[in-house]
Length: 414
Image (cartoon, rainbow, N blue to C red; front, side, top):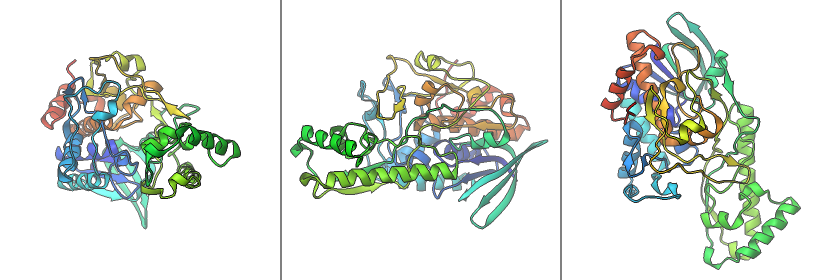
């Protein structure tokens, strides 16, 4: 039995569970993998952001608490947020140790009384008169959990789909990325023009694919890999599509390594780090009680039911690269509570990239700091709904905002 059942221990779900637990809700967090953190940890994007906009902090709360704890404990350094980044927004992303963040998030869950269930996933979801009955399966386990409130933080709105509520998906989704780092060569000694010609010849011969290096081998080797490759048709919705996505990501790594090792200047080339999974940027979005459009986002609309800020460029990746569209100075978008509630639902919320939004707005909303803020808002709302025996849409907005502020979140003023 649980007051709040959170499915998915990624960027948003971890924060949602901690927040619900800190409010005294009996909380269960279910994660299909082996650790918390999602994109920040398993996905390898160990530089979450953006928490600051135009010289001031706009996202704080539990996510910021964990991020800064990871930085401090590992003797890392925060960026200088007083320095404007211009169009180089990544300068305000916070570099941290992903595995350490996962451990700190786990510790915070345990201190909040959250029951963690790794290696499990829902196989059936049934609505009851006072909440939900969810069947969970995992390694040697099959259990049924009764919950007053359900929060879908799977990234794919998987639970929403199981229930039969409407979801949206593009015919062509953004490519994914397998994060890894290369070393053992000197960038300054490379003949980039010759290397580009060799890469083009390798693509023509079928030994390389343009997506292996985002069609820019010079940029790829300068960055040492990292976020400089794409995996087309990346999909994490089912075990079959997720398997295929991970295989394509690792095959891409093998192709680029074999190509570069053929060049004398890369004789000492080696992998310094490599993630176990390909990160996925886009699958399903819910149809919510409210929808964030790209116009809402780029003009900084303050929704009447805004519960969090978001800040990031419009960041739609295509097969061969990405060109971010930065917001106009002073613009800080907001996230409405209604975008976290599937239309027509009761006792159900989502948080993370599957919120109700159009595709372009989603390309900015999906980033880590924004998802952490959504997770905290969902955790507060679900816990208050469970406590008062109501549904999220009926929880007084003033109570949600008051509780968020009490727990360190920055709440938009409408």
